[in-house]
Amino acid sequence: MSETQTAVPVPGLPEDFQAGEPLPNPMLGGKDALSPEGKKEIKTLSGPRPGRFLFELGLNWAVIGVTMWTATWINNLWFYLFVIYFIGTRQNILGLLIHEQTHYLCSRKRWGDAVTNLFAAWPIVVVSIEGYAKIHLAHHSYYFSENDPDFIRKNGKEWTFPMKVRFLCWLFFKDAIGGTFIALLTGKKEPSNELISRPAVFPMWVRLLYYAVIIGLSVWLGFWELLLLLWVVPLLLVLPVIVRFSAICEHKYNVLGGKLEESTATIILSWWERMLLPRLHFNYHIYHHYYPGIAFSNLPKVHALFEKEGLVNKDNLFGGYLAYFRRLLN
Image (cartoon, rainbow, N blue to C red; front, side):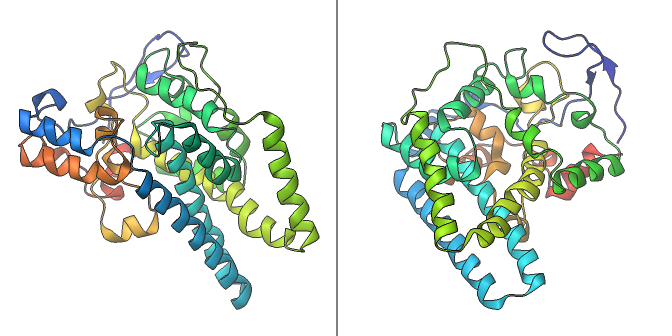
């Protein structure tokens, strides 16, 4: 599908920023259009869900452990390749759980940040939850403006749609050979806005000790090669591909005007798409922006509520990833 694009000067963006057409609006009414009963239901769905968060975190690590053990037992090249991809998807789940606690959806107390750092952020070499929170909460507070760090950094040819299929394939290939791992992580610079802050739960020396202990134990117990193959390799080669793919599926970043409904995709996934790439219901991303205090496990219920009240334009929902990418590519 072709789109008319013009160079539009925007504070914080390069002068050659190419603005594209908005996405079709999937909503017939925003959150203010909900009935009083609907708003009451939203309240019941809001707030931390520590049980679900800890279950998801524990299950994820259990699956990772069993998968690694199975890989060493089978000891087959093709199975190792599958496991490298599979563990990359589990690392992505850890990243999504960091996002959850950024909104205090595990706990509003400091132990929630501590658990998230120890078992989600630090294992995938994210600086810390407090560092990520400054970026992500600025994205929510200053959505698609010059103060939104995600909007500012995701510009240029790599984020301009429509895009040629071969160029997108090249971007994914570059991610898959490790070419963008450092850029993807270091690109999340903390915004200058001093109003968005998150106190650290651990001093820096604790994090350094954390890595030293893991490396020391892996050498002492002789599993350092397994750690490199089945943890570091997915982190370098698989996770960056998933990060880019997920970012494209959340927002179309070359849309101006800051209207959430015209820059955020709502994708209805099939069961096999959810299995191939579990994303903790991030396909309902618009509802997360409406209600950032609602945990991932309740986002399908929010969508069902909006459908029940006739506030969803079903013609503008995307039926799977393929339908969405057909809209973006040429």
